[in-house]
Image 1 (spheres, helix red, strand yellow):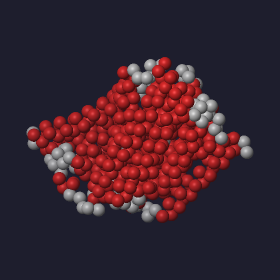
Image 2: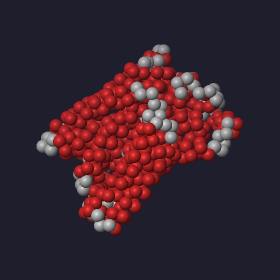
Image 3: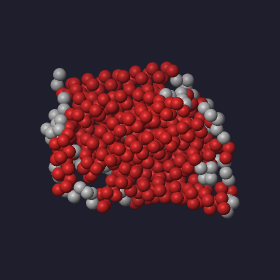
Image 4: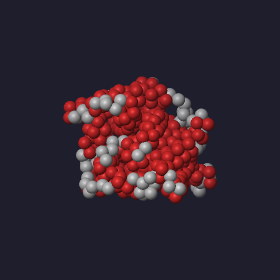
Length: 496
């Protein structure tokens, strides 16, 4: 069989498996929002951990971030992948998973807006967070589309619009048919596909003629970096690298679709196992992905390939002389990663709107099964909106950084502090939420969403939000304001 036939057969087998997962899970769903959004809170370690990892690492990382970071920082970009594994996965699970699991189970919380309303007794905070989540997860979803279209356009020669439509249908089918548990089970399968695909990809890229083996490749890249002021990095590049590491690692702590993975874990034992599994997955997938991107100058020298940074990795793969079957596996790897991320983003954004905006504020008597049906409809609308935004000419890396910076800038500090500090109050949470949101949003909006400094503004927003939460909570408590009332009952949890 020729190259394209082999690739399409591999992709077809993958599509059939994912469709089967969605259909089988749809028959098991009870139809309620508890089942659709948190899967009955009975997920095991492997499913939860791989779902976390596949939601974390999509084509945005493999195509946008690994290519862009590798081009800008050379071998230093591998530090981004290591940071994602250590800070964005290992530390995140150790700090957040068990506390979040216990509190959300105790109060039957299904979304981040519900957590904020329950902890701070503020319906307004629920509405604000609901709107921010829905609106600003759309550009992140769009960046996933852009990541896949670039690689499909290069390797398959398929029109970008067709690529986006195919991936939209794939993620919508799995999610709309089966809900949360369907995405978890699909992620379980896709997680193994990603690990196998990344391992094979690393080996064959290293053995490609352009790299010439591990020792030769590292030696040539080190020499290139020394000749081009990348060893050491210039101060501005070093700041950009650190900002990228911090945003892509700690930014996940405040993303609702990532936090959502903790809600459905069965018990504390599964959390402990999930820490190990998710960290291993992140080291392999993120470390491997950024390592591949770090070798980009061995393929192109100092000449940026046609199409810009978004086409660095696709053109690397196309020119590396990989076997046809492996190219098919790599495309399935990228599709798997992207479908997982899109499903998580879509479910989080749309269930938030249906539960926390429509039912809570507009149709309080709406039946549970109707809320589930509304969520499915919203999922379709979200996919269409993401497709439209994906056609906006913003590079993948910048588009993702706007989304992560604005959402994590607003929510990370109030969320994390509410898990561990009884002293944070409504006044402090509002200050941190609004301060972080505006710090990340204003520079991006003023630039017309074209500033390349999105990661830096995201880090500033997250740091400022923490300061505002702490200081304003203390000041409000000292002044005995009404918004400084404590809610110690929130922490009276049962051991489960």
